[in-house]
Length: 381
Image 1 (cartoon, rainbow, N blue to C red):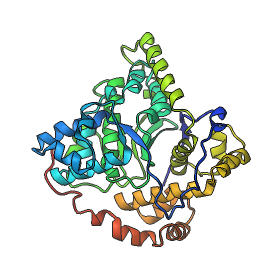
Image 2: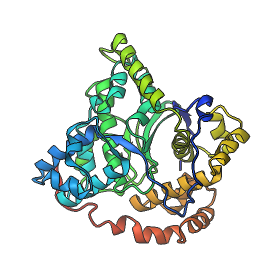
Image 3: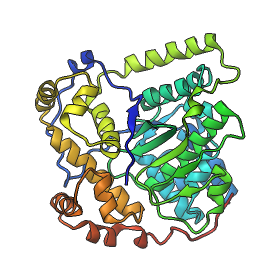
Image 4: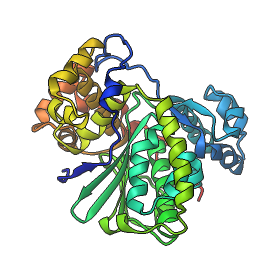
């Protein structure tokens, strides 16, 4: 059951950005395959090659099998399709027989892996301001996932959710993302920092030791989303050696990058929907308010693109549902609650309309029991 939370610190486009919407085709229905177009800086994925060598696997052969040029992984500033990252991790798991390969990649991530965003975080005055910047600007580094920062009383939940449709190995990406964010927090707060707990949207693996070595705290599997949970007091922690001059330099750079990428409003809306569905009762009115728009104004913009609010919500719910059914053993009743349905039967009807199958039938065909590599094979620390 989800706790009441207050969403915070999500970067949204201004109203001027809405006036520059590009013309688009009709929205893809939830029962159809949406077009994948998110991208990600190679960043920490540069570590894929040295890690494969440690497993005595040829990196070039693996990356080519995933359909990419191995030279792309020689420069962390290169950009690859978000979907390609999932393919690479799928092939890496198959060749290494390591079911937590993504975790090991993420364990090697640092602030510098995030490029100029990492520099901005390093020189923010406090952890709270650093995380605000992370949530506002991560889309410049990664446009296939949505970060969230939720504050509920004295508890903070810093999460990451994949919203790119049909991505392979989402559990590997989520593992890696949480490992990177843990390293970021330890850089900002001190090497001894540990979260109260870690949430991961994947089936519980056989080898828990690798997760303990990375996070040093209990991990809860089969969760709705990937997240670190820690006390709110850390948001006020002052960051050691933060330099206000360097901060201004990185802020200017990030502003330039934001200006260059302005106008992709529809993708920003999809990111907002991904977080709204998992953290609130998602409605057109509440989402429009996050864009400082009236609901009817937002509807007109969507209609101009041949899209509808409910169709986008259904697409997003269908993608979240498939991820939870495929990668976790969360009971169907809890999946329904996570997606905002008051009754499991309503979720079942909606899922059958989207896919032509019941959620139980989908899980039987695609779920953890079908993924024989989970929990098997050689592991590495």
